[in-house]
Image 1 (cartoon, rainbow, N blue to C red):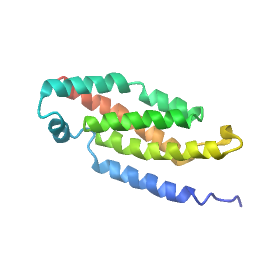
Image 2: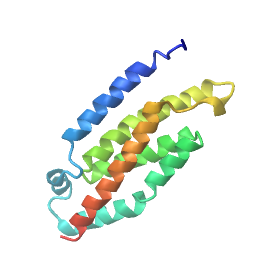
Image 3: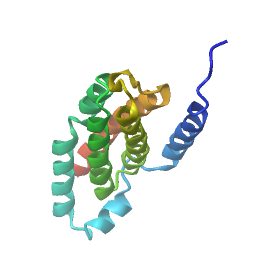
Amino acid sequence: MADVDATLFPSLSSFFFVNLELESKAVVNMQQMQAIFGGNKQLMSHAVTMFITSSKEVPEQITLALATHNFEKLHRTVHQCKGSAGYIGAERVATISLTLQTAARELQQQQAASAEPGSVVAPLYVRAQVHALTSCMKELFDELEKVTTQ
């Protein structure tokens, strides 16, 4: 029987917890967004447009960073995404971005400590988080289009 990496289990449990937590989060928390922008619809619309413009490549960027084991790029991209999503009240994207940011930082540290940095591979739960963030981003873009057309 193959050895099981004991560090995988806490990561898996945190992954499932985050996914359960996502169900309680809004794709876009409109009350939060309105509070952030003081109800100024023009400012809100501008911020949403800027978010869409600056974030539309995030799903492709994080997928590529994961595939090429570029955990520094993965960390930086989800860090920026987390901040931008929080700024517009995109709770699901901000939540999963934070979790993925932490995982990417851990993978960066593993690479730095490894004699063969290219041999550090993202575990299944990290790949699942990238997929979940990509799905959440698509859902968010659909919701934001509704906001900008109102």
